[in-house]
Amino acid sequence: MFRYYLLILLWTSCAVHTGLAEECADFTDLGIHHAIMGTSLDVQLLLFTRANLTCAHALSHDNPFSWPELNASRPTTFIIHGYRPTGSPPGWLEELVRLLLERADLNVIMVDWNRGATNLNYFAAVKNTRKVADNMTAFILKMQERGSPLGLFHLIGVSLGAHISGFVGANLNSSIGRITALDPAGPEFTGKPPDSRLDPTDAEFVDALHTDMDALGFRKPLGHIDFYPNGGSDQPGCPRTILSGTSYFKCDHQRSVYLFMDSINRTCEQIAYPCETYTDFLDGKCLNCDKFEGKGCPVFGYDVTKWKDMLVKRGQTTTFFSTNNWSPFCMTNYRVDIVTWNLETRWGFLKLKLHSKDQQTEANIDHKAAEFKLYSEKSLLAQFDRDLQPVEQVSLSFWTGNLLPPRYKLRVLRIRLTPLNGSNRPLCRYDLLLEENKEVIFRPIPCGDSNF
Image 1: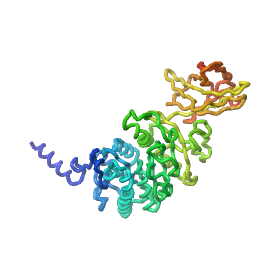
Image 2: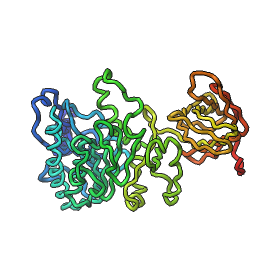
Image 3: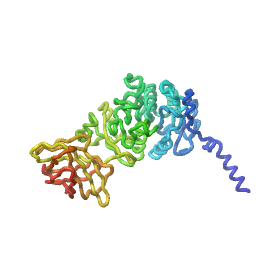
């Protein structure tokens, strides 16, 4: 009995302000009937720290520091969601909060404007973005008054949230440290002037990710660096027909969040290659990273700030990379240099397989037919779904895509495989004869210093 009363005493003593279950705030959960009727704007700011990782504290707009967990000297990250046509909370919120707090000791503030974002009328939600930004601006200014440096604020905005972040940054005279825009919304923002959308002047550093630029996302660059995975539109693993239901509409758009979370988790390192077009990237024309002053090409995602000063100096940089269908999304890239000695020019496609012990991974270089000319080196990009080391064998096959004979042969004087991820040595093979549609398996050797 004594232990029972002691437990009650301890429970009540902790009830003052230490995050009891009854004091935990929840993200607003609405339904389709709210979307049909429309919702009036109400902004709730939910605080998470390492001290209250699973128990959100609703912050007061008038007195941000009423909760002791909010530390003015810590970096602060805001998460701002986008349009919510059904009213349900975003499924990725809790995971994103967890990953951020595992990486760093932060104040993570979830901006819950579900009341205002939930509406079948998308244009009504768009009109609310300025009001949300004004609400956040006033709150941040109160934090600044208590000693929070604006340079330590990071705004992560998804879809409409990306433009909200831009409005906040503009309100604060570009003093925010960083804005990360995850597939910024396109409808109602495309074609608008910079003061009506996100742009690079809204923060000290702006990085943007485009995953659905042909539908819900924004097509043109918006940041100091813009990432276009898989070209910026159709993402691998996402459905291609409306028969798949709601996933058809949101999968490409939401992939931006999952790619960014992968980068926080550091499950792999995704190199992003500056290039004019995605086709040029696939053609292997943009694989030289020497221009980045010894740092190499930027790494996509959370850690791109290592290149911040250089990217701000360069202006706007557009980058491309390809991903897997699943997490980890990173692919392993090789530059493939081939010298052929057919007297006549051959056009065709290649498939490579890397073998290591009992595992293998393959890459198809088939986005367009490559031209192979006599004694002329052809550089191509091969992308594998994982990194296998050591590479014990390589399989290589050639095809033209012609349905009718004749079957051609490709005479390879030298093939060189240079890994672009990591520091493994290039691998070579000399004097191969590829018959169309027939696989050749060989054991690669370390490349020599000679041209051939």
